[in-house]
Length: 289
Image (spheres, rainbow, N blue to C red):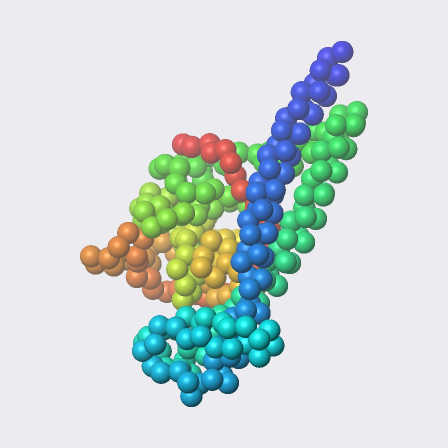
């Protein structure tokens, strides 16, 4: 009876965690579907670019809009124009928008396929857990879902909980969600020998990796920190980008700069692909010192 009670208690915890993950995936699925609907108008942008291309001589710089006949549908199309762009620049802008929307559509469709796979896998796992009487399997599943707490030596280097927290290869990573959190991360999380990551040439989150006083960091930790910097930036939809990383002691606040703006020296760069699923390492609980 005691084992049966323990088994049921573990089941309840596991299923609760899995259902929370499934709820997040469903929300992501809805957001991606909205993106697909938004990106689906790339053909309209291309068509407007074509119409402008074959009617450049009819467009005058400074016009806010023009009405042109679509030779395929035989209907009039109203096209908005930028008053500061030349007719050719307006045409190129519509082609550029079409190309960007088409690329976004492809990425969104791939993300939707991957999300649906994750949802199916979770639904199967929930069903399997509900039907399982294997206490060892359930304990193993529980241990994988709830990682061990970070070591005390790492939490001592954190004065307060700031931003999103990840736990990877026995190391804590912190990610700022806005400028003020980026500022606070540099001030309050870790010491001078810990490592700071940031996407190159884009706006993005600051990422801090706690490595300890010796400052040692291996390639796997660099890859994870760089991936966090990529997926939490304006370049998040890109498959590969450059990320800067350096130790915190090499950061200097920009004089009279906005929160989170720092100069850096002795930096290194890494070209990173989105190969690590960082969501798996999100650390919801925080064991603070």
